Amino acid sequence: MIGFPEYPTFQIFLAIFVSMAITMVLLPLWIRVLHFRQIGQQIRADGPQRHLVKQGTPTMGGVIILVSVLLTILMLTRSTMDASMISLILICIVTLLTGIMGLVDDLSKVVKERSLGLRPKAKMAVLTLISVLFCLAAVNFVGIAPTVAIPFLPTLDLGILTTKIPVGDTVFSIPWLYVVFVWLLMAGMSNAVNLTDGLDGLAGGTVMIAMVIMAAIAFRVDQLDIALFAAAMTGACIGFLWFNSHPASIFMGDTGSLAMGASFAAIAVMTKTEFVALVVGGIFVIEALSVMIQVGYFKLTRKRVFLMAPLHHHFEHKGWSETKVVIRFWIITALFAGIGFALFFNQSM
Image (tube, rainbow, N blue to C red; front, side, top):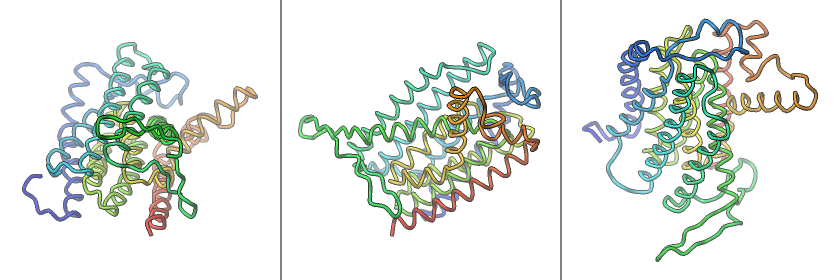
């Protein structure tokens, strides 16, 4: 860490400020580059008609978000290699890999000039590989227990079906049920945040609120390195919102949304707050469920439950302004975050 006072709370607030500052300095330059290269967002034709004016708005702002977070982590974290540092490295790797996948997806949209990028099966295959490798590394190299703590209920043991493979002087464990659970959590949350990223400032603001809580949780369980990461992501979101607020000058693209969702899930695993994270990120869960309900019900009845999915578009079709939808979703996220934080304290007592 660079020469700043080593007070944990100071470091966390510093991470927020540094990441925010880096984002706000780099984003104007990145926007100019994207304008010069004529790299803009492709708007889905079946979406709200008012969104058509956003066609061509620079995208891939997630690149700067990831750069800001990683630079902040490099500047502020310790050099001691312990379990906490290994956890941070794994979270950074997951964030970077999903970000790269999102970048490829964004670039394919620009090249093909359509709103759809990589095929869903290809995305899911990559997310599956990342989540499985992350889970195995977390269990075997960090010592993460294959359990899920649920407030007011007994801890769920997902390690009952475990294969142990001798490797030299150590034993490599594959807790099959927990691997499946982490895959569902990481792939689901990554896609859920991606679905939420449909209005100016919606994904950035909701992730910002959720990451503040995850930073507080990591700090509470003495995982300062992870708290710094969550704080850095919070700061990057704040800096990004300056340019992404309506009307947006840039979108984060899949580069940002997929990486944010995956990093949120990774933090939950490393802090053993998987269930609590589902509550904190409740707005993402609701957005994903709205799409699943819409698609499933339409296939069964050829009718729609919502005017349009994801859910934020439903409210747009009901006449809400984009700004009203975004601010109200921020408020709902704050409510979920508060409930999740209260549940965490009950779990940790």
